[in-house]
Image 1: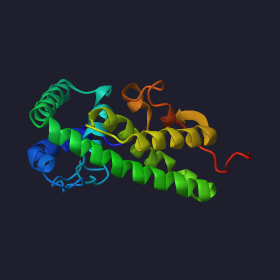
Image 2 (image 1 turned 120 degrees about the horizontal axis):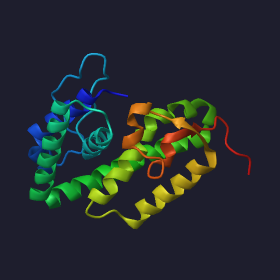
Image 3 (image 1 turned 180 degrees about the vertical axis):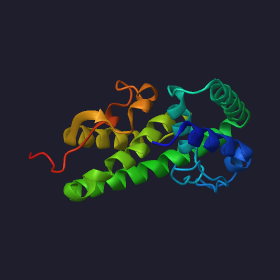
Image 4 (image 1 turned 90 degrees about the vertical axis):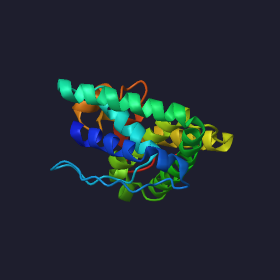
Length: 194
């Protein structure tokens, strides 16, 4: 998983033009920042990405300066959310729908060819986490979307094999098993026989 600095830098960059992003029609917004050496390239800015970076940092070990910066960034994100509550909620709902489509596509690929798609799970699970983090931020999610998440979770649970945490021990405090059960294991390479 990326470093603490990676997530801090993403949140820092997000705040530069967060109001512009919230007031735009775009769900995926260009982010003009380079990752720390050794970390992966940044994805485009999304509310799901902001929520994931924030959640990732909640339980991470940080030096005092990083903790102070995280506290400040979180405060500023909350201020922006409160100032632009309607735009934030609308953007979160649109991002939720987009992430749900991607998650559904992955699960569909997995159902069709589990042996070719189960190894993608550690990466694709990011989308499931974002769905969970975006839901309370959203103004209105259609009941059909909630039903789809529930149905996909049922399929996931049937094919899920409990095991070690997907993303590295340093993130376990940020993603407790009771809340993020689907991060503690992997997908079976063959679907259960019914």
